[in-house]
Image 1 (cartoon, rainbow, N blue to C red):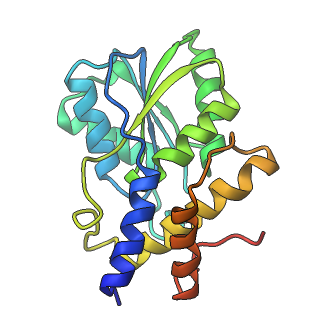
Image 2: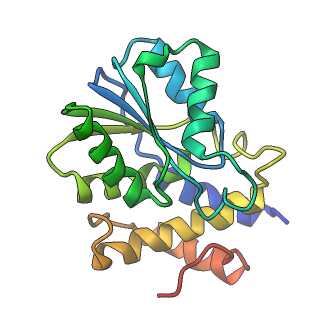
Length: 216
């Protein structure tokens, strides 16, 4: 149940995960796959608005999608982009990755195979994955310049028929834990977590929102 207390704590995590980057022209739009098809729509819209000349969809079947889909995230996302009017020749598909680190590494390899070397990226992800995507990208490809964006939705607007508020909170809590733990594992760059955000995390865990945690 989403009580007023839970709502307030969750919005604190939501706002921390958002980076608030301003969109600017780039060499490539990199859309990271997930269970949320609105991420594909956001990436397609950015391409059609002229923010970059190519768009790369990255994602096989991850922890959340391998149980619900047969077709890979990247292939589904690319189909949405084509339906929106993105030309096939502008689309690249990386459909083997199963986590954010692999998204970056396998996308880098794909671009190299095509003899492409983008210097600037617009990375598109779910709202509550912006910060972790940034930290992962900068760890694995630090010399590149990037901004991160996502579907333009508030915490209250984001849940849908497929993604309940409880599920969103559980994933957000897990992602914050990963931001804390993953730099020491070599998966991400360090990101400072303010005390009030970490306090909100510990309170949400105590309230039972622990379904997406990893073993420390």
